[in-house]
Length: 48
Image (cartoon, rainbow, N blue to C red; front, side):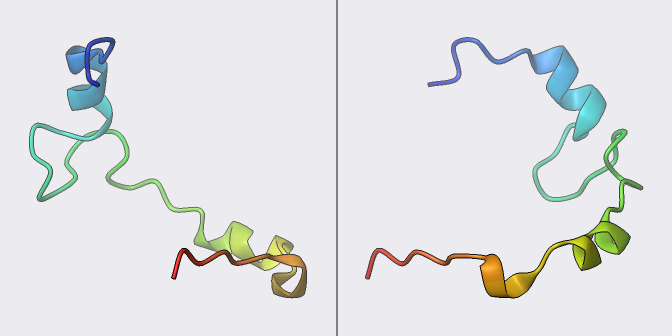
């Protein structure tokens, strides 16, 4: 499953641990972008 994973790139973006972000994504925030999307047009799918 992870055969093509680039470990060096992953650590640079995420950081060395799954439990905390410390890489380049640490301060990435797109919450202001969410208002662009109309929630009424969003479809939710459930497998239950």
